[in-house]
Image 1 (spheres, rainbow, N blue to C red):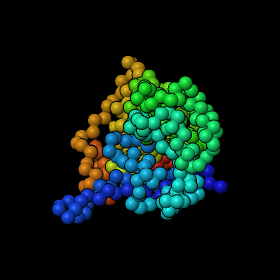
Image 2: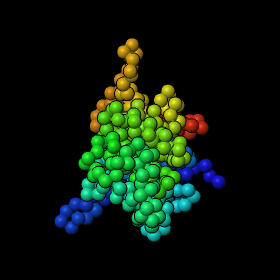
Image 3: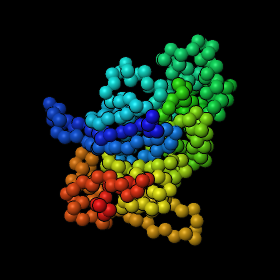
Image 4: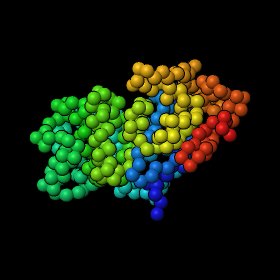
Length: 322
């Protein structure tokens, strides 16, 4: 039996660009452009990169909240990209998502009880009394007071709202949770509480996480392996300690140089990238990063690098190592 819960092969998600009165397709935005990776059962897999690099689109494409253009997503041995809506609904309970903005992902007209009961009602699980019992247990798991059962989302703080969202994601005992920047909208003091809660729940329920973030210090604390994305592509993938101690790709090196060091006596050299991120509708030929890379060669401008296996735990897409 495979130790991998998720296997992604050649995933592409393109959004058509339509122009003119007749809305003819004149091109496409390659939000996710040929991703391949796997996620082991019980691990936390991080996806990092600048805003607009395709992290969130990748997460949604894996769950088919956005339909992929091409590629294959194998979840627990089943190809979900070829499933019908009926077949997909059957395994939806095993795959859940926690969104970045907890307020936007909760129905403001529903109480906490109704929000947490909804997954059980949709899947026809339990009687009314049984559902209430399950809701109370979910609230206990995420640190919410049962006396808050009949309150509405606007009556909670940001951290409490995110706990409600996490409780809803846990309701059907999922195997995989895609956490799409779950702490970026929260105060720093609350972020650590939510991260510790997620770690605790992971141990308690044997969860597998795909953790999407742009804050590299949060990723270092939370993830086991990390994939660095740039313009819809993975440019480096490594075990956490290896990536942070020995980054290979020039983009990864620049990202890590921007992470603050909490020691006034340690001086780190900041790598400033020149230019802007290219338009994803007109991605550069060859290596997507060559327009900003200080080490770019003529080969980088014409030939797209594939992920090269440097070691068992480290892959990089860069001609410097080929």
